[in-house]
Image 1 (cartoon, rainbow, N blue to C red):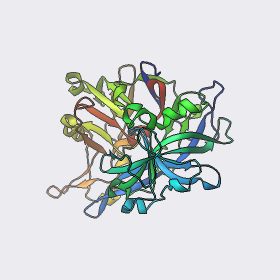
Image 2: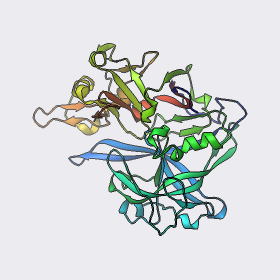
Image 3: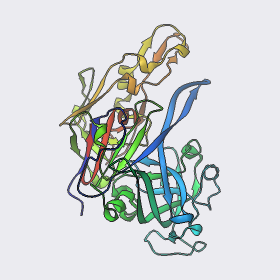
Image 4: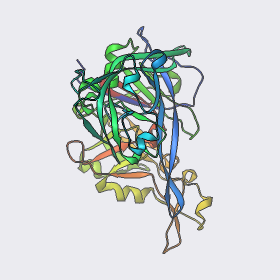
Length: 399
C-alpha cells in the first residue's frame, strides 16, 4: 500500500563525477544507467531556431542468447513501457528495432488483464496518446533488464520478471520518426498506467531488492555531457545542496505534480498564481518549460530580449543576460536563467528589422482536474536541478 503522499526533490546539480555514491543505504541495490541526448532541429525560414530533445538509454527484453536490446526514452509523464512490435508496419516502427515476442524464452502474449492469448488470435488493443502523436498496440509480459553501475561503481544489472509491455502495431510519424530511440519507458505514477500492473517502476519496487523506492534523474548541463538515471536511490555525488522535499499534489492523477505558490521574474511577483491556483508537472519527456495559456504571452514578453544588429547567425541567445525566473513551491523555490530557457537563435522581425531572443516556452492548455493553470517543468529545469522521485512517499526531491 502506498503512503498518503509522494515526494519529489529537485537539488542543485553538480558536474559529473567518477563512480556512483549510493544515496540510500538499506542493504538493497542501486543501479545507475547512462543516458544520451538527441537534438532534432526546429527550423523556420530555413534557419534553426530551436531544438526538440530526447534522452534515452538501453534496456534488454528477455534473457540469455535470446535477449533483445532496445533503446527507450525515460518519460516521467507517461505510465507504461512501449516498444515497437515486429508486427508493426508503420514507417516509425520500421525505422527502429522491433521486439519479437515469439523469439523470447520469457515473453508471453497477454491481454490487458494479464491472461495468456494466442499471438494470432483475437486480443485486446489500446491506443496511447502523446503530445504530438499516438501508439496503438497489443500486450505482452516479459523480463526487462537494466545494465549500468552499482553503488560501488562496478558493473551491475537488474532484471524484473513479468513486466507488462505495450507492443506497438501502429506508431504515428511524429514524434517517433524524428528520434533515434525505439520505445518509451514510462515512469509516471500508477494512475497513468493502463492498470497499476503496467507500471514498470511499481513492478521494480515490488520485485527487486532496491536500496530505496526511488529513482533519480541527472541531465547534463551541456549538450554533450554525461546524463544518467538511477534506480533504487540517488547519486549523492550529483548534489551540492541539502535536499528539499515536496509532496506530490493529486497523485491520483498519475503525474509528478507540485503545487505552485507564486512565480517571480527578477524578484517581481507575477500575480497570476496569487489569483488562480497553479501547479507544475515534472516531465522528462518535454523539451520546454510549459506555461498556462492565460499567462503565456505576458511571461514570453518579459523574457524576450531585444538584441543589437541584424545578424541572427552571430548571436547565441543562451549567452545573453536575461531575466531570472523563480518558481516558488511554498517550502522552497527553483530558479532558471536565460542560459537555461533561451532559444539558441534569435528571431528577425520583418517590419522593424530588429532581432529578438525569445524563451523556450510552450503554451499549456490542460482541462481540469490537471489544468487549466499548469506549468510543465521540462528539460530547461531538469538540466539545472538533480531530481529524485520517491515512489512510496509520493514525493519529489529537488537539489
